Amino acid sequence: MAELFSIFVIAIIVLGVVLVGLGVKVVPQGMEYTVERFGRYVRTLRPGLHIITPLIETIGAKLNMMEEVLDVPSQEIITRDNAMVRVDGVVFYQILDAAKAAYEVRQLEIAILNLTMTNIRTVMGSMDLDELLSQRDKINAQLLGVVDEATNNWGVKITRIEIKDIAPPRDLVEAMARQMKAERDKRAAVLEAEGLRQAEILRAEGEKQAQILAAEGRREAAFRDAEAREREAEAEAKATAMVSEAIAKGDVQAVNYFVALKYVDALRDVAAAPNQKLVMMPLEASSIIGAIGGIAELAKKTAGDK
Image (cartoon, rainbow, N blue to C red; front, side):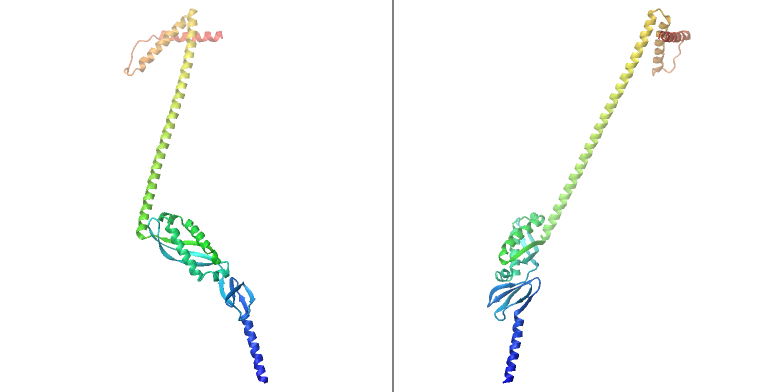
């Protein structure tokens, strides 16, 4: 009888240890566990030490609450202008509500992948190929808005959707390369023509400025010549007035001055003529000397009057 009692006590102790082991749960950081009671969800266990009722409560789902990434498989898409392209991408998501993620959708990752692939075909199929290749940020933002809204009921937050690669067919790539080369050649020709035009404009501006400066120089020279002629005329007028006054007073030297002046001018004109190489003619030295003496006498008289 004592032996049976001992066996019963040992069995009770072992059962208690097993029940304690079944009831104590440790949830690691970044994870959450759902607790079910007779198959029905009752609560969520967050990171830390927890105790559940053994045999009555069980762990339903173990969910990773950290941000995760899914690779979107490559698929072919027909654009609005009937171009066939191959596209793949990645999806970043995070579970915010463990209960919804566990009980509102079956196979969460597969559901997110299928939803993303469907919306990629919808969004990118409504665009032309040029828009597809040049507006990747717009595509990512539009996909993010649509997929995130659709997964709200699943307790999931879609943080990012990125299109990794857009691969058009080879013949289309070659056609695009030829088009790009033609565009570059066109821009180069336009830039070259613009450079030639700018050079012609600058050359014309330079010639215009040179002509303006030359005209200003000629005007300044003409002004200087006119001023010199004016001063010469004034001096000539003064000299003529002085000589005329001397003649009026009966001074013979003044008459000799006029005669000598005309005489010297005539000789200068004869000597400057291009068809005259040698001129021989008699000269009256006494007349010239007398004229020079008359000039000196007039100068002395003028100085004496002053």
